[in-house]
Amino acid sequence: MKPLQLYGLKKCSTCVKALAWLDERKIAWRFTDYRDEPVSRDQLLDWKQQLGDWPKLVNRASMTWRNLPDALKTAETDEQWLALIADHPTLVRRPVLVQENGQLSVGFSDKKYSELVG
Image 1: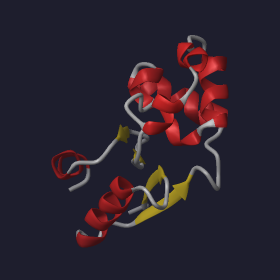
Image 2: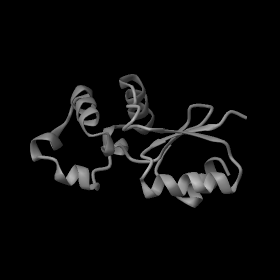
Image 3: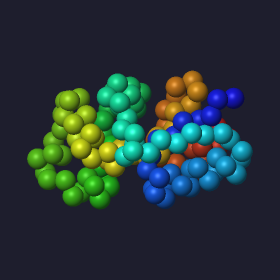
Image 4: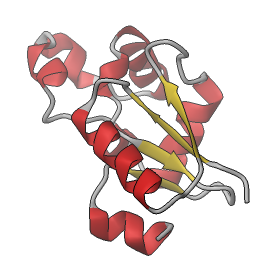
C-alpha cells in the first residue's frame, strides 16, 4: 500500500497528533511541510475544488488570519486566495491528508481518521 500523504507544519501540534495516530496503527505516511515545500498552485486549486471553496481550506480562526490587515481578508478570486496563501502558508488548515485515491481531508480527529483510514 502506498503511504498516505500529509501536508502541514512540522511543529503544528495537530499535525504531530495525526502522525502519532498513524504511527500507532502502523499506517505508512509521507509528510510535507508546506513552509519548506510550498504547495503548487494547481494542487491548491484542486484542494479548493474538492472542499467546495477557499474558506474550507483556509483557517480563518488562526492567529495568522486574525493578524492580517483587514484589506487582505477580503480575498474573493482564486488569484487573491492563491497570493494570500503564498505569502502566508500557515493559513492552510492542517493537516491536509491526501489518500491514494485522491480523497482529501483537512484537520485531525481520532474519529475522522478512523473513518478515513483506520
